[in-house]
Length: 143
Image (tube, rainbow, N blue to C red):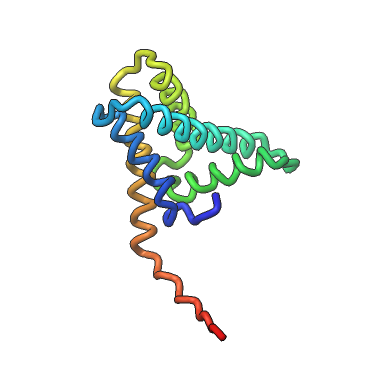
């Protein structure tokens, strides 16, 4: 991620679209496809990162580094809410998103659990953005 997650509006927009899709508020196929693709990438990377940490292997390649970074973001914002269950919730959410993208049947309880995780994550990002001071303006000298 190039921006701090709490400052990355595109990242937050994908989460908001995912929540809207789960709530039945978006039925545009192009938006659904884009949102599911991005969400599955985000959650599957974080899920893989949690598994890599569980293996306690210090050898990390570039692909694993991205997965660990993704998991670290979720851990930073959601560990207080989900604790030791966070890795399991990431796995559940990844599986649910894949089933929804494939138009497979999903039960309401699983959908609600995933939506709650995404809403908690989005709330934490927005709270973090609101509480962080803005960066000082950079001085530009012309001439």
